[in-house]
Length: 279
Image (cartoon, rainbow, N blue to C red; front, side, top):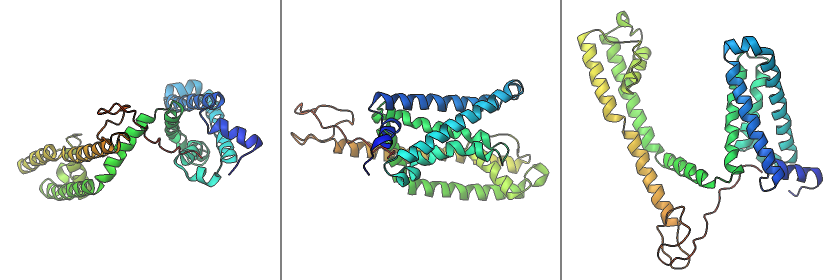
């Protein structure tokens, strides 16, 4: 959709980063986001709230009003309004202002404003840190490719936790804090992940033996998901190197950040930058 007049100018400033005005707008927005999140953190400190509560309240609504106007302007000047509203950034922009209005109905909802930190992801776009986005996409693809094996692994761990939790409920019972099977499963999960809060502990020799076995199982399986993701990560890195092919001699296997072919010295074409989420 072709934009003209005021909508076009606003679109260049709000969604663009090439012009000085667009970059300055995004930098200002990032600082406003950081300040608003810092405000939420300080407002949760009771001693500060007692002294500066009224100031915090005024500033909170100032930032909420600022982000509300900005969100409405984004909808107004977007090339495709529906695409923006349903995009990742569009949803985050909406979630950034909702907590303040929800707080009028639900007490404490205002602290959900820390979700505004997600909006700082725009800094990758503002500062052109495309390499970081590629690395993030690489990790996401690796996790996605390993999803079935990770699901099988966690399902197996869950089955083990249910079995050991049930056994501990039978062996220890409510007398020693294992008041139900769900609570016993909670103890098993805490133990098998080597966290060990210590709020529930076995007292009988048999229970302690089972706890020892649970801890050993935890140490033996804790590296499994890491190995799964590492294998997929290595596979994705290898695939990226194969994609980095020289158009002069056909040599592949270059690093993702390589600029010249290591065989003929020909300049490699840059990888295609990821599409911007903003319309």
